[in-house]
Amino acid sequence: MTEPRIPTIDLRPWLDGDPAGRAAIAATVDRALRSAGFLLVTGHGVDPGLRGEIREAAREFFRLPHAAKEPYAVRVGARGWLGPGAEANGYAEGTETPPDLKESLSFAAHEPTGDPAVDAEWFLPNTWPAEVPGLKAPIEAYLARMRELSDRLLELLAAALGEPETFFTRHTGHPTWGFNVNWYPGTETVGLPQPGQFRIGPHTDFGTVTVLDRQAGKGGLQVFTDEGGWEDAPYDPEAFTINIGDLMARWTDGRWCSGRHRVLPPPADVPAEELISLVYFYECDPGTQVRGIDSHTYLRAQLDAITAG
Image: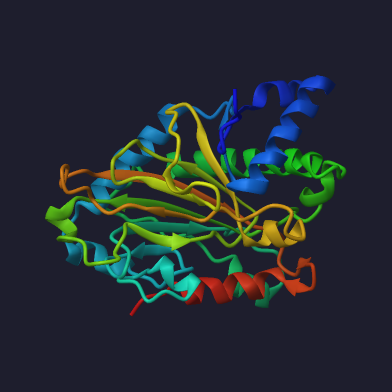
């Protein structure tokens, strides 16, 4: 059988340490990241109930009146609420698309390094909406698991490149990261899509690895490859969807491609479809040089680029 462009990787044989199993997994990862830049990962050990708790609490926030959410409004890259019209991911590709049809609660790295300039830009406290007190505990627990999982994935990626397992993680001692809870409501909330408008416009992510927990839907994730064009991403409720970003593609000198993707608008035949995605963007330590560029100068420029309005 032909191997799918986006394969499913069971992490358990990798974590168990069997040399033959680890070598086979590393080879599969290398092939997938040279094509689509995406994987599905099972065997990660993250409790699905935790993800459900986050969605339930976040939905309470998103369904509040606009006036109740407005005090938490921020620009892209900050910690708080990204309301309607705040973001247009297609801008990162130079495409003047309408704003993305979503709202987000955004969180980011917050434990200070002790360097005032670095901390003021990248390690500020997170904002927790008082209206949903049940949000903080499950998100903090989830973020701890995401940090751990992302480092394990970076070790696997290093092996897939034929490098020592610490090749990337030696640059994640005190990394930056971002976490978005993305709400994709139906047309009764966002209205009918404009031409060229998506829940998230076509783009590639900016960092090293992205860990996505998503829901099945017609207005869901699509991935672009040169071989297949735009195709619906495979879905497994037990799996995380993993993709690499621009920094990782650059780190590999173009061997791997950062995964180009988009999220379709609410479908015409299911206009009330509502989805919530949990998106963890892992990066690296501030000051890390990735083949001649400062990683965080690049990240800041990309965050600014997708800011709408």
